[in-house]
Image 1 (tube, one colour):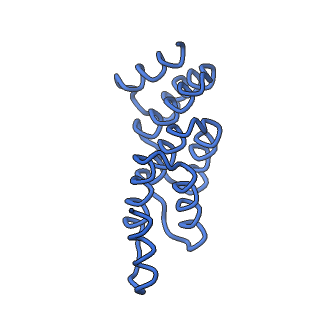
Image 2 (cartoon, rainbow, N blue to C red):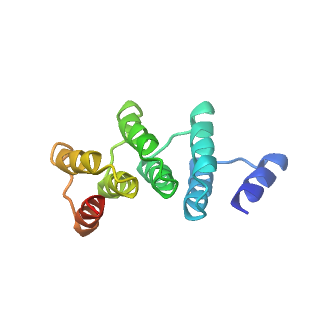
Length: 134
């Protein structure tokens, strides 16, 4: 439904924004439509629309839902190129993506890298890392 509304905006020449795309990516994340979320995320780059931490986190979380942990890690790495600071939510989504795919080594590497990024792990961070061990 979110994509239909986004399409209607384009058809009616209504200006879109990062908030519009972010909302659509978030809706795709919640609807387990990771491929569409990534397409929308990429479209933002093609039209030079700024992607912020929230949008990156939603895209990474969408990858987690689709068990696309490698793609999630690529997005996390790309944040540096876009000069976007990750936060605990971003790392939690990436660690959860690794956990869902049983990529526990990568989950632990991300957990260890939090200190380098000056981000404090929280309960969700540890729960996600523990889930990677299952």
